[in-house]
Length: 349
Length: 277
Image (cartoon, rainbow over all chains, first blue to last red; front, top):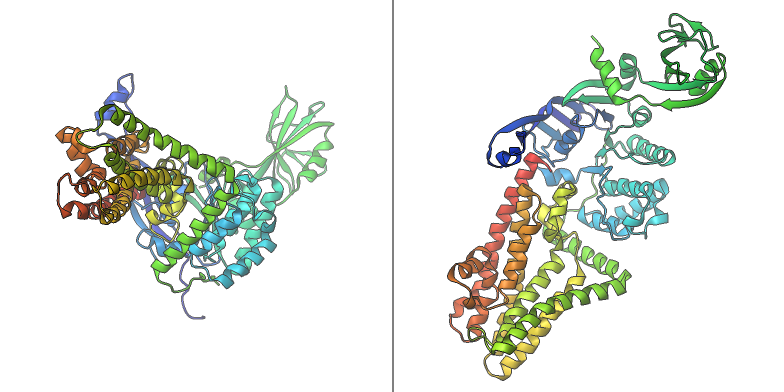
């Protein structure tokens, strides 16, 4: 209704999570001394995080391993209690109202299944629909809809343990949405999937976000997921948020450069690190419009590393330019590592 | 525009029962898909259990009685214990396997459901192969009871009390199982602890507690109170002492133990919320 302030889907305020681990004692008798000692060391998994997510947003949450992404999501879903700070999901605390909030959220853990391993897939859906008190009419509608969207019909009767990873992730997604939650937490859902399966999942997520207004928080290591799905991205490093904003600005600040490595039959003499290659293969000493930076050259391997931004150029275009410089023997592409992005972000003034 | 959850106002209890029923039928269907496996598994469990009875029977064949208990009387002890164990393992197997939930982090999946964690665990799986224990225990019980009824030592009312004792023993096993599982929140690996609290103590209570030293008897009645489920009532039913209190004790002990075990569980769970897995 206009005029009424919309309740935030997620709000965290100065969220902190610390663990206390026993201090490791070195040496042969160290293990024994650990048994008697009470000394503990504080590990801060999440240091001081605050962010708001409005209903209907699709937010990406990225960071290196061990940065605190999973810990944050576990606090949002009520699995962990924060050491200090506040968490609200749909206006309520997941710590105090875990079971109520559970009805309003869906969770998919990429590496763990929430389905019943030995039972046919459809049984997991039946059980979950009973668990969440889904009306029979709504359940029927769900079955039809998701069969269309995810093609579940082909493996409904197969036991979950026999499903391929792609099929299982489709089933997990469907299972997380049976009760029509308003917020969906996805923890590395595309891990291990092949290109086609990833594409299909991304299409599906876009659809439910745009057509049904489901708020989505996506934790991922795959930057292509972020690029194709999220407008807003949060970057966490060592327990702190180092970036929270539009993806476009992240690209501007840190760049999301793809690394192209080209192996030549003979290294072009003109090329040196720090120079730029223009779209027609010309070698330039400063960045012109559309020129790509030469990062490194390996004389022995006869390779040249070039950075280019996917949002501005395509791999074939870069390749064509580099072909003008000499005969190419081999090509490889590498996507930017999150660690590199963070390094760049931290370098910003 | 957020979607609203499709829920229906319904009492929690009814919803819980409905959910449990669906799980039961799903488990049955799953098992029936592999009929041969089911029959084989149940049979093997029955036979394995009978091995313990076989040991007892051999001892009694040699010695006639143990502390004044003959083979049929011990058979009742055995039956109540085994039927209780079978009931526990059929309906509460996931508690027995709780270590995996902590080791693999699967407890997180339990916590995101809109039900208390214990209920989610208990309703996760119903293992019908454990019927082997139940059938075997009931078989020994039937044979023993028949002999004792004929001899006039046991009355039909007594058989009713035995059934109550079986269910109470099942609850006592659940309480012990839950308390042991709660330890997993702190020490993670509880397999050896389970051997002590469950296997060793349940084997000990297959025999009349009279044969044990006082401290062990007290432990099996007060600490790991499995003896309260079979020894205490059966002793009175067979006229070996005690009063009607003996017959009232199993359900009371079961209720108290379950309360204590639930409390321990919640303590463990709040620890999990603090420390994760």
